[in-house]
Amino acid sequence: MWGGVGAAHAEERDTLGDSVLNAYNAFNGMRFEKVSHPQSGLRAADGVVDYIGNGMIAEADKGQGDRGQSYSYAAASHGDWVYIGTMYGGLGVQAILSHGMASNMGMSAEAAKNLMQTMYAGRMYLGEPDGKSAGGMLFKFNVKTGETKILMSKSAGIEGGKGIIPTFRSAFEMNGKLYFEGMVMDTANPDLDQREIQTAIAM
Image 1 (cartoon, rainbow, N blue to C red):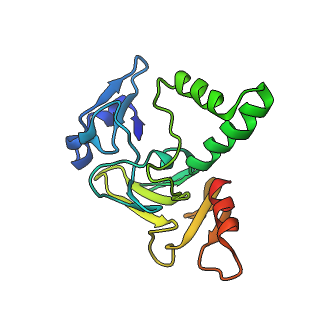
Image 2: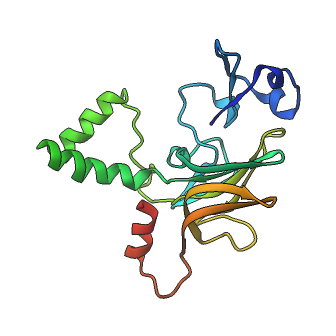
């Protein structure tokens, strides 16, 4: 995850600033800093949280960033925290490859995959390494300390957020509170089967 700050704020030193190893200063005075897994360096598979296997994520494990959680669809800031809802990337990509490109362009799914990998220099995200799906999440990131806290996800969360797959489309602040709009799926609901849950992950 890269964060952009104005030139005036870039001079402030805090815990996060001391850990930033990769930064880019744009001509317009904006400074972009790599804040997720700063020790991993550039061009490494990354994400704000780590994928720990079997469809599960954690705030910090061994630095194996979950690329499937890198698509921010709804975000808002409050104090020192940025709250971000991700749109899980794995299954949607597979659907586009196997149905969208293949059928619309007269290509096989394998040819469509090879074309996309060529466009992404062989680095296109195609899902978790073990084939499982983590689903989206809502997390918060502290811009001063770099601390990450998962609030809602299938495998981790706080205050009732564990077992909840969020898919938020927008976020806004009103009367000092943050609101997120979208859909949540409770994986503990006995009326839902695995197919319905997997469909929600892919949406």
